[in-house]
Length: 207
Image (cartoon, rainbow, N blue to C red; front, side, top):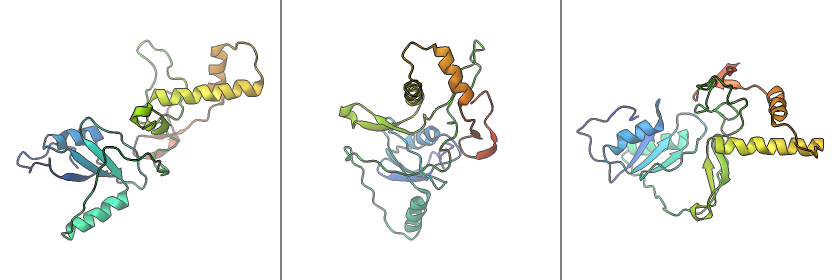
């Protein structure tokens, strides 16, 4: 699965599309090891039944397909058949609705834990921020799937705006009061380490 460097005698992959299972390591590790052998085009198939989205990685063109699609292609290759894939540098915009049954609704594995270096409790609350469909610069497609604080923060801002509107607040409200309202009414989530769902709640330091 390219989680370790490939043998030095491996044939150059520069003119091939590499079909590989998303392995038991970071995708960046797999790509780094493949790029050392010249890989420019990589098609991942995942080992679960739902599909995560992965953005572009430097000059390497990357795609991700479902577990079943990957297994189907592998069966063709084992029969000696050819599988041809076509990548477009300017694909038409579109959205694929594929429910994430593995990590949806759980804390993202890249999410930070408290305390901070100065022992403050940050973050105090979590919001959807992994693989979020959002607006993007129009010259780069207008829409993109992104992850991180930049996705979670607008969600919280929207929640607070709806709350203030529903309560009819006309005057300035203390931000600490709003923070405490969110913290004390939020729903705790169960722990997920990025691969496995657990029946125990995520630790307080991560919530």
